[in-house]
Image (cartoon, rainbow, N blue to C red; front, side, top):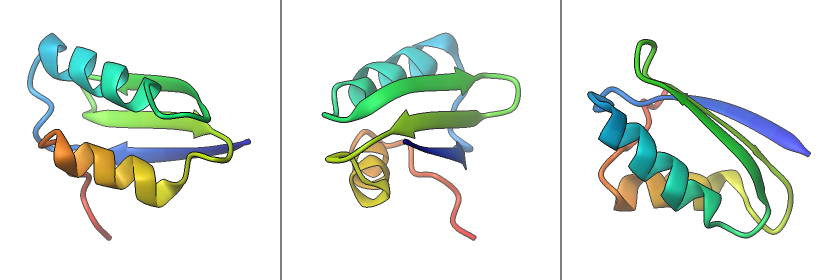
Length: 69
């Protein structure tokens, strides 16, 4: 089981949180998704077949790209 935390600058409301949680939770292998409006942080716990690349690609597809670096 792996856990990764992202900072996502365009989180601005509870709808953003809801969208992110729903889309990432739908990925096979994702165990949990926690998102915080105040800190703009999203933490994903996952196992194979989900991957960091797949999670990041999904975030980009739904217009919530994580900060790089």
